[in-house]
Image (cartoon, rainbow, N blue to C red):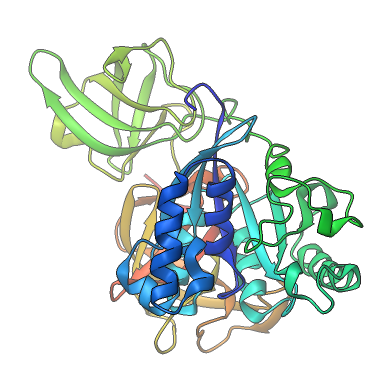
Length: 425
């Protein structure tokens, strides 16, 4: 697997549209599970009177999930196709669990959206599509699932009707024809997952697994200025101060002069290490440690971002964000101060002004200066961090422009930064 290019893929969609069963089926058909394990799951599921759930059990390892038949946490599984090595993130579709879905979706390079051929688009399908678009997904496969259960089974007309509905939804949030494929499948029976199905003679496109091999590896943004969020800082005897983090964009190499924001400290990079070996340059996606001359361990901390001295990371005094409220028990009004999680930073930020309420399906303005926001609302808001914080416009450096908003132990909203009023030194 290691020598194939790697992609992170998230599986999203409405609760009960068959996401976990689909993931179980993909893992089974790509040979990730020994047959005897599957037989054991089958037997256990039948004993509990949940026979049709056995494939989902492959993913839903938590006992509570098995009892309830819903996915709670984001679980990661790996499999490979002819071309790629995938990490699959099975994201919960259940309303209470959307918070876990964001964490998954904001790390993904591509997505599979499950839509049941029987129920078609549901409220949550729309929410997930809008959210995936907001959080940066640009390549999508729609698995039109449960095609075996239409009346009559494998009904082409039903496929075409739901396909038209889905196409309209995807276009409304800005997906182009090149960015998605819609494929009829049955996760339960195994139709059209890895092998073409005789039951779907009328369908001429690729199978689900073949379509995954048409995903593109996102270009490494090496042409942008360096942005390296710090995860930890070590002081190593005989070497000096070594910040550690993942390069999000740009390139880091020995000899570079970098500035850490918002700590506002500069240093010279003496060497760069990955997996305990010195390397001549680090690129986006690389997790590295780098030895710095000119700073002490306590000058820099987790949540700082390293960048070039001549193009430093942007520190916001305030910023305008487009957010989606996912799960808030009451309402959000001006003055509300939850914690924003962006890259490695966690900063309490205040909603200073609610600028516009948007239609979550289209992004069109519904109301100017609303009094409050509630679960399901999309909005533009002005945010003031309680202490200096690096954030970038999502259109320029998306990796540092996305965030989740957490409060009371749960994710209440997610969003992207669209405009910044920078801090003046």
